[in-house]
Length: 140
Image (tube, rainbow, N blue to C red; front, side, top):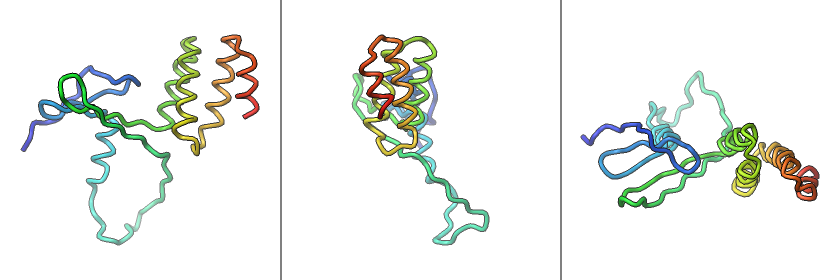
């Protein structure tokens, strides 16, 4: 059996914690949850008596090599990007927030959160005195 996974202080560019598995690869906590999510008890084609349908937003998973030759896996969804944009907005980092909201719109264009991303981006653009761009977002 391999070494256990350990959560340490490294985070990816989005601020998502990374988990070191063995000696050379890194996983984000979210991607580990996605990977392990399929490890539940099998029903062998039968629907459990207490089953419920849960509709989830899509999750984007990206893997890249890091400087040490390991693999960095990043997993995020529209809600993560909206949360990060909202945190940047609250901190007064309006340009950063606009970028997060824009990423949500471009990567998850079918998400139910797109309208909130457009609206919040417009609020940030008003703060940045980019009124024409803000008007476009408010009208989208």
